Image: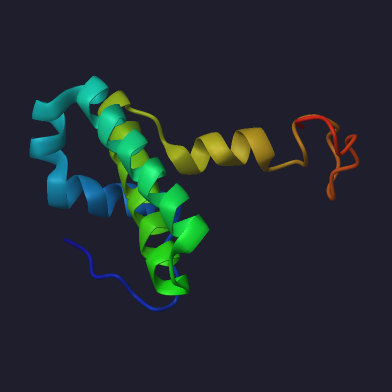
Length: 107
């Protein structure tokens, strides 16, 4: 397994790291059960947003990202490619960067 470096980690590297650590367990668990774990982590993130320290918040965000990477691995989605295709040329709503969509609307 590749080492994590202080100079950053791409989404693709994160997915590979998660796969190398947990791939066999994740495949056995499947997408539906993994989604439930992801949902639980969102609940923990919500709690940290309301009353957690900065460190708790950061760790819960890392957990959400790791479980999302797990789900992407199980379903064969390259997150880095998906993010690039959706957001790489600007806001998906207006096509601009920065976004000029109406603040009341979801871009």
